Length: 345
Image (cartoon, rainbow, N blue to C red; front, side, top):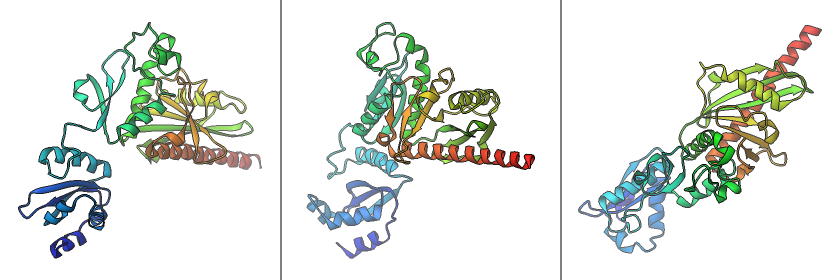
């Protein structure tokens, strides 16, 4: 390695980005991407692998810093196709990253494609790993049963009989809600910031029952949009009916922006009373063996889906929202109990 290259490497940022190896004529030899540009360049020289000619020709290193590692992957793909470097054999062809297309039909199909412009519909992506994307879609289908078949609504497909396609029969009346929930989930997986609301109930043996609503914008809570509810019409410890009450009351507040998805703390019993809520909805049931685990349900899927199989970004956001709704509900309930104690003393 030349003294010039050593100096360049010493000054490289430890940030995500795309880097370029150049020869003495400033021609690009190789384009790479990195979560940490400096460490990745150093690793090249620590283990040359099959790039002996590449390194012997290198006289300069340049880079473009990006916001995230995913942005670096996408930019790398674009730049390799543009400059066609000699030592980037893998990405020189016409292959692109994967997209999910929700087709422009009355009952949209879900299509995974590398050429999204060839399919009419709403395209979401890009996704770096087609294999990981397909696994996510396979898992999420258990709570948002989507269509992949060519059958009409009156001709149920095999997946319908397996509970994995809700575009046929009576279930089709809920298909637009299912697709809205699916689209939100896919966009969350793609790192897009979505508006989520999470709800929980707290009481002491059915008395002084309250509900909480916490709001997340992407993975971050927005405490300005938190709301508290006193349960008015339900007596005793009845979480499903209590959730139904506060969700119906929340929906009357049209001045509050409706979320992309509702999340409730609970499983099938909580969701049983919520099928008529006109927004995408999932239930997050606790796993009492492990605080960091839970099961996902929806009113229309046959689930459950373990949160462990979900991508980390979704898993972390949903657990944070659940825990925050629980904390906020307990805090409000304790305040009501303290107030009642003071009034009765």
